[in-house]
Every structure is written in C-alpha cells, then in structure tokens.
Image 1 (spheres, rainbow, N blue to C red):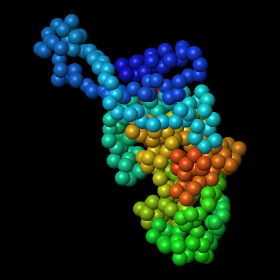
Image 2: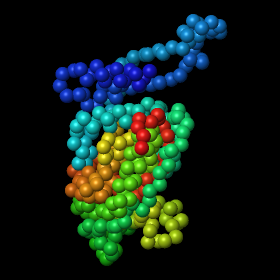
Image 3: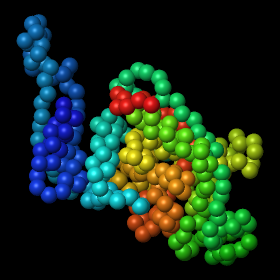
Image 4: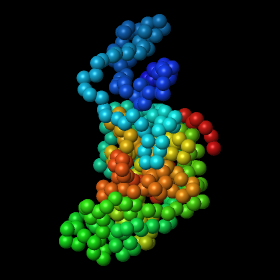
Length: 329
C-alpha cells in the first residue's frame, strides 16, 4: 500500500508545471508502517468472509510533523555526476531499499557485519531463487602514487606525532597537507569490465552486491583481520579492503550503494547512500566520475564538495536476492 501511495503521489507531482520536484514528494513523507491485523481486530471472532474482510484493512493516519525535516540537497549530483533525470531513478532505488529495511536499527560497528545484517533483512520477503553469485577480486593492479606519497614515503599512522616528523623519509600526509589525489588505483581493464557487466546483471535480477573498497587516503590501510590471514604480504593492499559497501542498484554506469560508515552524500531516512562510477575510458570503479574529480582532503572526502568519502573498488562479492527481477542477463 505504501508503494502504491508513493507512486500515486509522484505521478500527480509529475503533472505540475516546471521541472520535476527534487527530492520527490513521496520521499518527504515520514512513512511509518506497523502491522496490527492480528491484535486490533475490527470484528473479533470473525466467522464469515464479510467479517474477515473487515479485518483485512489498511488504516492511514496523518500527523503534523513536529520536528524540522532532515536537511537535504536539492540535487543528487556527486562528484562528476550531473543532476538530470537519472536522479529520479536513484531516488526510486533508494526508496525501494528504505521500504524494505523499515525501522531496522543496524549495528554499524563493523562494516562487513553491518552489510550482512542489511542483506539478511532485505532477503526476508525476497523470491527464493539462486543466481546471485559473483566473485571478482584483484580488480586493482597498480598503485599510482601522487605527491606527497611515493614508494618510500607513505601515510603517517594514526598514532604518529606529525609535528615532529611531518615529511621524513617514511611519513607524509599529516594534518594540514594540501588537497590532492594521493594514492590512485589502476585496474585490469578486461576483468573490471566483466565484473561491472556481471554486477549490472545481478542487480537487474533483484540481487545486491557487496563491494570491498580502499580509500587511497593512506597507503595500505587494510582490515587488520584480513591482513593477518594474507600469506603474501605484497598482496595485502589488493586483497584486504579498508571498507565494505552494499550495492543496491545501478543507473547506467553509476552504482547506487548503501554506506554503513555514514560518510556518503545522499542522506535519506536515517541512512546514507552514494554512487560508484564505472569509467570504461579510464578503467576505474570509484566515487569519482573521472581522474579530474579524484582529489580529496585530509579526511578523505572529495573536494570541493566535501560530503562524499572517496572509495575505490577492490572486490565485488555475492550479496543476496532482495526483490523480484526486472531484467535478465
């Protein structure tokens, strides 16, 4: 019923003069869904069909909002992303996700565990079918160091006093460092193209996809547990993602993801979402649409916007099914 009402609201809004409202009116409603059919019967002890039909009802209550609405941008353009009709599709993907996730309070302490929790919630009402398998690792093959990084000058560790050794032979990018691209990943073009094609296919089939990413703010900052299990120390940077995302849809070559870290630009319903851009010309899958938009500040946020953490994909993994298929491979 909520989906039908939201669609009807947006259809009416589309008839208004001028450009379509952004964000759509349906996303500005504080929807609260609660099932009460078994506990709040209109006809107790119903024995005939007409009486049972009265219990199968939908009650809609309207309240005046008592708090200021969440502050949102009127456009959804991330780094290098123009605000156009694709914004409507992005909003629909996010709205579908929020409809399914409901009021769930996700434990965000561990990003991989948080993604697992989200995937399990989404699977509850999903069609029971297989076919969501994907496994692409080793996508990144090259580390392109940018000043002040080099193969010998790396990022300061969190506990290093940068005031005493700001730019020694092994320490760089301390507080106050200029904005810049720093560490940029290079990709295996053929493997990346196959991974992107497979990911799009799975998303069209109603699946979600995990994405392991590296920010590139510092050199080699993997998950400690993964690092301990990696036999080849030279492969740690490629096989141990720093963070994990859950990809929930795509618009062309832009993948919409849910971010447990609360460091992505699109804030909706208490959750944060962003875009991973596949650039087939530059062979990249990152939150920057192209190399010119990969600069970040010391905190790892894209500049000049400063609202989206930079992510560079390392791994695409199996997620799970969460809705009926809209297409096939």
